[in-house]
Amino acid sequence: MKKLFLTVLLAVGAFSLSSAQEIAKNALGLRIGGGNGYGAEVSYQRGLGDNNRLELDLGWRNDRNFDAVKLAALYQWVWNIEGGFNWYLGVGGGIGSVEDKRNDFDHDDGAFAFVAGNIGIEYNFDIPLLISLDFRPEIGFSDYDVIDDFGPDIALGVRYQF
Image (tube, rainbow, N blue to C red; front, side):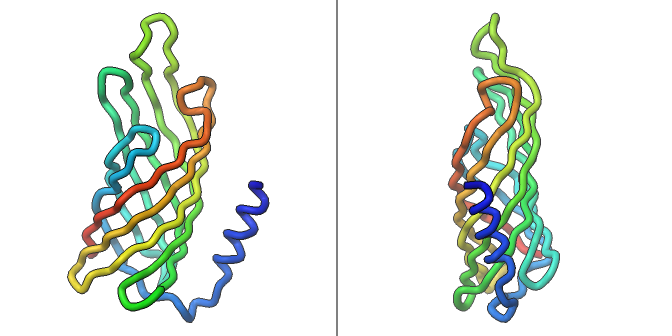
């Protein structure tokens, strides 16, 4: 399954650049979702070319059950649908740390790593505003049960472009 996913991703990445629309050099905002309980993430996108970019997302959680922080980095390919509408695919991963405060005797604390895919749609307004909706499946790796699994994430992104 993983080989099939990577093969499809590479095939899509090899598409002709003729359908690409130039993307903003920088975009900063929020990615608001519910995957793995992180809620809103601070999101930064850096254009690397006419149709590809790097996205960095920093999420944190601080409540009575968990203290956690997560940093995700994704490389994305962007294609124009029509006008200001684009769609994109990406791959990446990240790292994080979690402190489980639910049980005084059996803590699931420590660092974790994850790999992620990304697919989404976005709209570039005539003003420097970018709105997106994306799906990011993540597979986590750690020595404990809190993060060591599959985690789907659907999120709405709102970013200022400059």
